[in-house]
Amino acid sequence: MICIRLIAVDRRPTRLAMHLTDHDLRQLDRDALSRLGEEAVRRLAERLLADLKDARDRLNQDSRNSSCPPGSDSVYRQPRAGSERDPPTDTTPDEPPTVAVGEIEETAEAGDDGAPVAKAPSGAAAPAARRPGRQPGAPGFGRNQKLTVNAVLDHWPARCAACDEPFAAEPVAQAYGGYDEIEVLPADPNAPGLRLWVTQHRFWEAQCGCGHCSRYQPPRAVVLPEWEGARVDAQQMLGPRLAGLIVMLCLRYRLSRAKVQELLWELLGLQLSAELLDQTIRQNAGQVAPVEELLREEIERAGLLHLDETPWRESGLLLWLWVFNAVTTVVYFIGARSAEIFVNALQGGLAGCLMSDGYAVYRSYLNRIRCLAHLLRKARGLAEATCRHTSQVGQQLLDLLGALMQATQAARDGPSEDLAEQQAPNLAQLKALCERHQNSPFAKLGEFCREMLNDWEAIIRPLLDPSLPLTNHAAERLLRHGVIARRLSFGTRSEQGTRAFALLASIIDTCRARKVSAWDYLSTALQAGRQGLPMPPLPAVSVGG
Image (tube, rainbow, N blue to C red):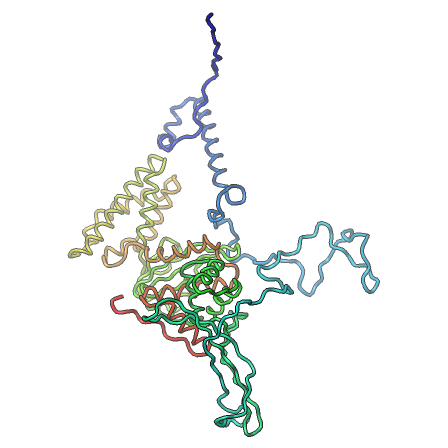
């Protein structure tokens, strides 16, 4: 017996592929559309519309509506600097908020004086979110780790506070206070490794022959107004070297407070709270704040300054992290992306050349060099465009820029004659190409050509002096650490934390550029700040550095 199986055949037309490839898009232009019939254009439009919707949906995905990590969110969707940090209100602080008739519930409770107390309307806004950290009134937690004291150091008053006479050899004295200081000992060649040393400081009061009892007063540094709340004096539980180590772990090695806690416990057996670590960073920044002015003066005298910026977040507010790199001096600032940062940082002007990208603010400085790496990337993007005409022009621009860079690099190794005159034909062709397409209907091509013409003098400056750099990689490499820190921590959470990050990072990277120990300099500066002494000078550039 033969069994016959019937197979149903779907004779409906096969659905075309939804997505158009880059190869397809490069062949589509006005001429190609004019050769298609009306029905073919309609079907193509449907496919293009589907592609556009799909691309727009993927573009709008972020950590709120997809599985994308928060670090992939666009920083441009955050509130920008200069906007109100707190929502404005229509009432002044001295004026009680008004409530419309009918918004007070009839079941109001009576107050202590018998008068009815209005309840908040049902549609009233929710109270503001609580601030991060321990809340006021919370009991908190104290230290429960007891460390063995290795040494005792007594502090005596030098002279009588009343008669200003020195004390006798053995005055009548009594200890009235003190504190324990935990410190990391400097490296010992005979016993390498990190070791903790606990010193118990005791404060004494002594009685003078005149009858007055004087007390030893520990030194206290002057707290700048912007560092209010960061108490700075000699009575600190963490010694200067241990505090400097915490700064290095958080700022240079980008460890979170929790990981620093874990590392200190694993290596030193020391228990510290996250709040103490954060307070240590802000206090240290307040102590070394005068160094920032010294750094700013050095970048003004630089013969060559690399400048760049990248987005930064401060509690959701969009700011920008700026870096000023003068080869052996590095200064960071965090603020709005405007000319204000650029002008304030270089108050005394700039003695040398400025290497930057195409940000319009930099064009106010005439002695400028334009980073060719940015232009090469943009030209490569035009060469890879789906529009055939844009791709052809972009390839020509890319070839000409590449030829100029190669000629400049070759002139550094050999005898450089008149490089600008030698490359005059390529320069003329490049400029003519930009002038011809500066008003191109293709937006990206027109923008690039206008940018080239606006920065023409800055672009060709290395041809006049081949020793000048061609790229801004020096500043971009420094900002890479800031970008990683932003992705790990999502920026800073307060204005004081933002300022502390920029200041301490400036000191650390300046020491690294000069090939000296940033930990040693931070420890010395912190010790001076706690004693109320002037800041030590910046470390000199090491020989051969």
